[in-house]
Image (cartoon, rainbow, N blue to C red; front, side, top):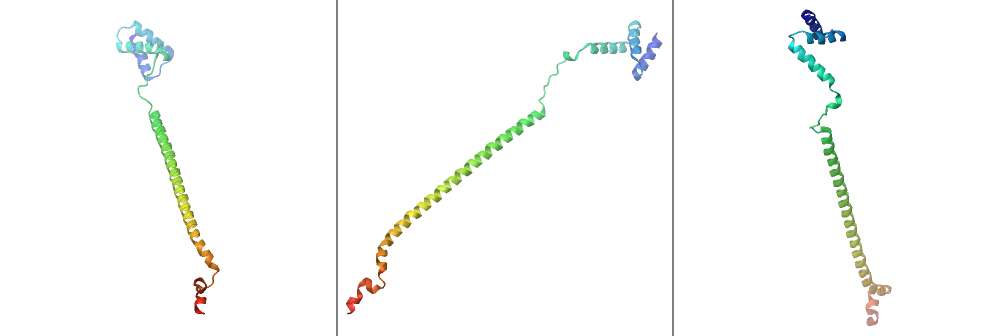
Length: 143
């Protein structure tokens, strides 16, 4: 019986046994004395085969690195969007202020031109006189 068990175990470790031979090994191990390491091995295999996958709860102690990098990427996108919006706002504000300054300058130019044209209106009355002699009535003095 020990010889048969030894032959079957040797065949088992080579990976050449059938399911019936494996059952025979288990039965022979229960009957024969010795072979303690093999008995523990097959007892462990039997215990493992009784455990169902639902009995295991895999605890995920580490966070997935992809989630970590996605969070960083999302923050980068948010900061970029806020910075871009802030830049556009300040750019529009500067354009508005420049437009107001140009309009104020045009307003000053217009008021000064009106003052200048009003002072020229007195000269407009003198335009019909052709010569300086007529302006100062010099013809009458010569005669």
